[in-house]
Length: 121
Image (cartoon, rainbow, N blue to C red; front, side):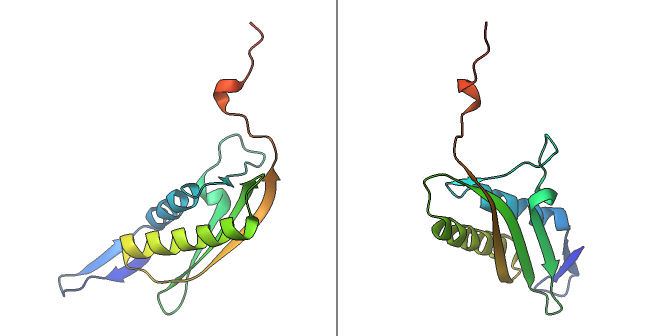
């Protein structure tokens, strides 16, 4: 678990790792053009594509593995993900983000919304 000292001497404020991971997941999914790539599992959890390491100085480094929707500029998407993660985590937890590594594992060429799936009735 990650620990952050409260500003007053009333005790410690402790964030569970899953809280920070949830904030990162929301920050990543809020970037337009990002596709969360599912592996062999049908249900993808944030543990599958987000890794967080707490450094000795108390800062955090984050690694995100994701796909990009075809037609989007990959460096721009990666930059937007890095900024979104850094801003959201630092605003919501007061942790400092030392780095955000973005790994693009796939480019998705044909993304059909679930409402367009044909059920041969």
